[in-house]
Structure formats: structure tokens, C-alpha cells
View 1: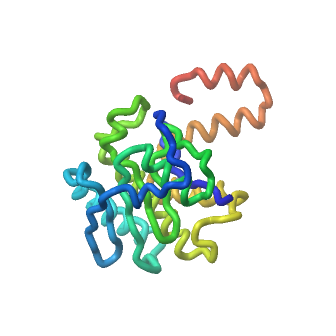
View 2: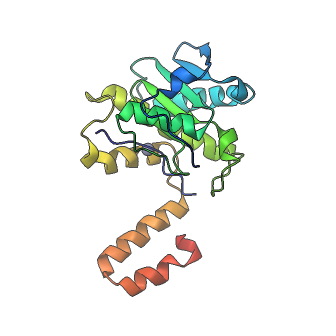
Length: 212
Ligand SMILES: [Zn+2]
């Protein structure tokens, strides 16, 4: 089974209609642009302009970073509920046991970027702030890096590339600008833990705010 590449934002339970494809349950509104098509439901009409703007800006950032354009057009799906996102991932990955965690809000492969409506995030209890447009932009750019990677990799959906996940994710975090001071501290902390091999130190340091 291919790995589900989702954005780890450091920062619902539902009944499952097994085998049902979420995208076919939704009355999609489609906007066609030269480099991508975007699909969203009526409830997300009000936020679609913001998402479109972020996709355009993210494409520019990715192209500037790699100094090379996207290979081809792709689709963007904005899912109106976590249930719908789960159904889609279950269908895509052929695994009906997939239930996205609250920090899983988007994924990207060569031909498609899937994102959970930020209007859903506001109603879920976790640390990410859906009103943080800068963080939202980095999230979009991160997933667009995966789209870009998928377009140039011979394996467009990353099937069988689990051993390269560290590189795939690392490039996406770096290129999207998500590698901030807090995340660098977390990397240093984990490395220090590994080198010292002291459980007591790791437990102590884990409780320090700077390493949160
Ligand atoms: Zn990622």
C-alpha cells in the first residue's frame, strides 16, 4: 500500500460507507485554470478565492525553489468534511481502515492535491489555527511540493517509496518554509536524545516549552 503523505502540522468520529468514493457523493463546483482545476462544494464557495490564491502563490514558490515549472496540470479537491476526506483516502489507498487524525488535513501526489476545508478545522479541537493565513500558505506550498515531486518521480503516487519518506517530507518542509526555529529545536532535541541515549534527559527535555 502506498504511503499517505500528509502534512504534519505540529500543531471525528463518523460512520464509514466502505468502498464509497467521496468525490462522487459531492456536488462539486469546478473552476478551470491554466495550471490546475479546483473542485469544491457549495459550502466552501466563500473560501475558494483564498484557496485559489494560495495555490497560485504556492505554485510560484515551488517553481522558484526548483527553478523549473510543474510538468503538467493537476486537480485540487477541497473536501467539505473529514468524513468525505476519509472516504476518499480509503478509496484512493484501497484501505477501509484509514481514519485521518486531526492533524491530517491535506495530501498531494503527482496529479492531485486534496485538502480538508479550513472551515472544518475551526470546528475541531487541535492546535492549528485555520485563520493563520501564513501557516495555511505554507501548508498549501508543502503539498504542492509533493505534487511537483510526484510529477517528476517515475512513481507519481510514491507507491513503494516509504524508505524515502524522510527525504520527500524533508524537501517539502524546507521548500515550503516550514522549517522554522521551533522545528529546528525539535530536530536538535531528537538528535540529542539519540546521541545521549538517556531516557531521563529525553523525558525532562520533552517537557521544556522550547522543545514543545
Ligand atoms: Zn508532506
